[in-house]
Length: 192
Image (cartoon, rainbow, N blue to C red; front, side, top):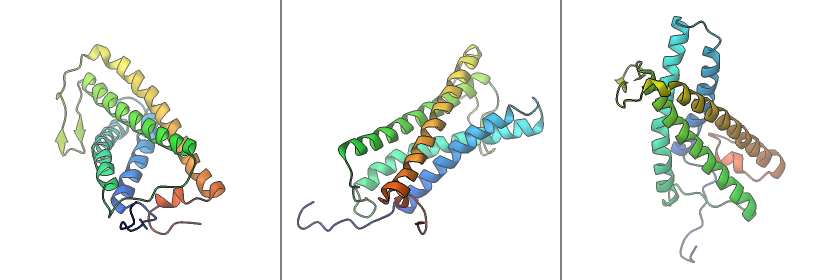
């Protein structure tokens, strides 16, 4: 920072960043839970098919969010209006935080690609809340269906596990380190 550059005073991420983060978090939790809930439901029932349709639509929503997130991050970090001051901390702590975010992004993108490929391999309707249809955009042989399903499930478990570690790290920062990391990502008034 130069002598003529004013210090950054923003203490929370902007509303759009917060929305993208929490939509991602809610989508991951819902997608993971819904996939396990429909396994308990009888095959072919309207409830199971409806839950699967919502799962697919939320997966497409997550894909759209994950296209926007890195673009917004690049833009906001270069904008005086939206950029955040860097946090204090050791090189190791910052490296772990960057590594965690990188791993989460990698798993999210991998899971989205696997989800799309899996759905295309099923040769069944692939719609976004009935607004548009992605059915048949890519031709995937049905023989890959079980392999893709297995990978999709494995990545889901890795993603939800890493997201849990991420959430626990945020709570560790808030309650033990008391460094404001969690408050930066909370909408509205931060809790103490």
